[in-house]
Image (cartoon, rainbow, N blue to C red; front, side, top):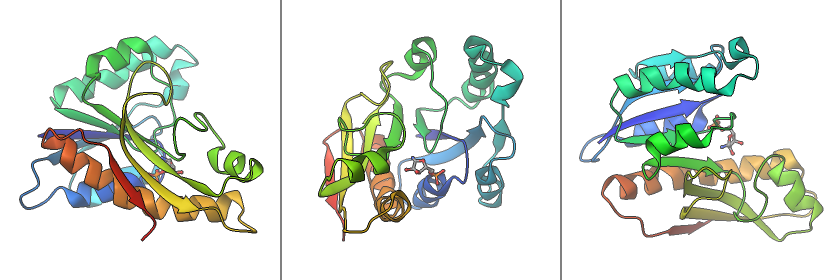
Length: 197
Ligand code: GRF
């Protein structure tokens, strides 16, 4: 299976995904793309030997369709079987999603359906939740709402800030996403539930 990954920043989840696709793994990373040419993850992907590209979304000044027309070109050229969003911070239109629906995954830093959208960790802290975590789901046109493929849970601890909670969740994201991708690449859509080791 050919896997393309879209990032917007550091790409720590992308690195873990790329590093997981070795040996008898049924998938290989064929392309990493970003909406930000300065994304640090692009250099990390390059260092791992994965071809990269960037389409600067700021050039398109809110013309989402034009941005996506540029974004989809190198993606289609790579002929991916699976598209993984990993720390990708742009909202994609239903038209773009429809091109990959059923084979497009995203990781979101909350226990969906709680806290779709942004500032998920602060919202969990403010709500007094005892647990937080991350979710890998199939991408559908509705933001952060597709079928669940995996979830990882962590405790919210007294005195947690959004930064301390985010760091705890990120550790679990790095466990969850590679395991979910491997199962998905083998056609196994059984939801995977992890809790902090
Ligand atoms: C992290 O907060 C993660 O929860 C979310 O995007 C952010 C950056 O991830 N998915 P990454 O380091 O770029 O993978």
